[in-house]
Amino acid sequence: REGERERERSRMQYRRGRSSSRERNEAPLLRQEEETPEVAASVFRLKFTSVQLLVFSCFVATFVFYVERTGFPIVFTSAAKTIGGKGLDESSKGSVLSSFYWGYASSQVPASWVAHKQGGFYTLAGAFACWSSLCLAESVVLGVVPLLMLVRVAIGVSQGFVIPSIHCLLAAAMGKGDKSKAVSFVTSGMYLGSSTCYLIMPNVVKYFGTGVSLCMLGVAGYAWLLMWFLMKGFLGGDSESSQVQLMSSVDVEDSSSVSPSTPDKKNTAAAPKAIPWSDMLRSSAVWAIIINNFVFHYSVYVIMNWLPTYFEHVVKVQLTGLGLFKAFPYLAMFAASNFGGFAGEYMVLTLQVSTKWTRTLINTCGLGLSAVTIYLMAEASTKAEGLFLVTTSLSFLGFARGGFAVNHMDIAPEYAGVIMGISNTAGTVAGIIGVAFTGHLLDVSGGASALHGWKLALGFASVLNIFGLVIFHIYSKGTRVFA
Image (cartoon, rainbow, N blue to C red; front, side, top):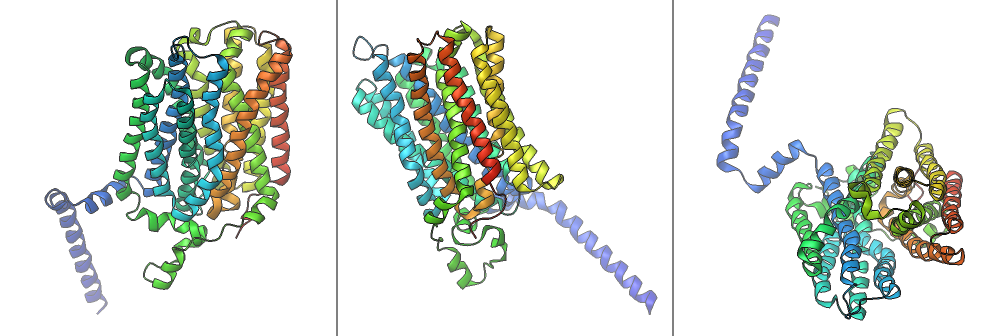
């Protein structure tokens, strides 16, 4: 009897082997003859998971909208020379350029609320549709400064919905896994977009003119929007219900326990949780993120906006004289931002370092080293020294994003977009204050050619970075704060 059972098992294994082999041989023919969009989506997901596709799509989104943010000043600087016949003065140009940030800062918190309630997929799509359409309107009102300022404010409001929507989607999709690598990769698209724009946009303006250049920025937004809707089928099918609703009312880490076949639980998951605004504003961990977002963007916006003036008056070289090297600081920041994400994931998952200390160490290294290099920027005397110090400063700042910029997903994954909206508001305000305050310090110190003014301005940014890393070290947390 034992022998008969053994022979029967062998025959069954042989039949299963022949059946699977036949299915494998017939599968390509079936795909060729009866392939449907659903089958194509499932085949595509065999190579790339839905989370990987979501992260890549969000990376392209940050790349594209930073191409617009960096591209408009380049286009407008060229157009401003002929507006009104005699061109615009510096004060008028500054008013137009700063109008974007007022709209951007005002929409961060409302955007986080909308993304939390309505879901990130369509909120992000609506934001891209709005600012892309407004870019086309810019080319029409380019010569009318008041109307142009209104359009720039509206574009700022529209783009203010982008980052909170992306963080809502990432928090819902990532679940229990460490999110530092994904968040760092997505946000690094900003710096790659900036560097790409610095390389390409001046030639686009030169050969096609300002009107066509602005339209091309809008078309880039439409191209991403088309890709976003085409990718919806590959993001796990019903991306809104399967991913976005998880972060609304179902605990992100326990969302797998919700059975789709249970009507009551499914309906419950569709109702977003109430946002604990008062608890958030009283939380020291949330304020640690807000303060670090402020000091990070203060340094970044000061360096980026005053970079041409810095090279002209401190290093004694025109930024255009750097050639392709002028994009190198942003490319280095792109690489360092990704390195910070990989380092965070490696420390948490491989070295088993606690999330709290992983975020703190990365944040401390990034802000601490950048504080040194930012202050030394005033001492640069050659083109090589200036380029090296600017590159290292932005690289260390990019590395720091692997600390504070991921922490909101650690302490409140369901409300990640909300906390990101609040902290990003602080970061935008920091840019407005930092750029204006730096100009004031340079004026009262004898102008941009006086090194004393640069030491004051850059030294103040360095002190802020030290203050931020100390606050984060003391008050940040690596565990869930809002259950």
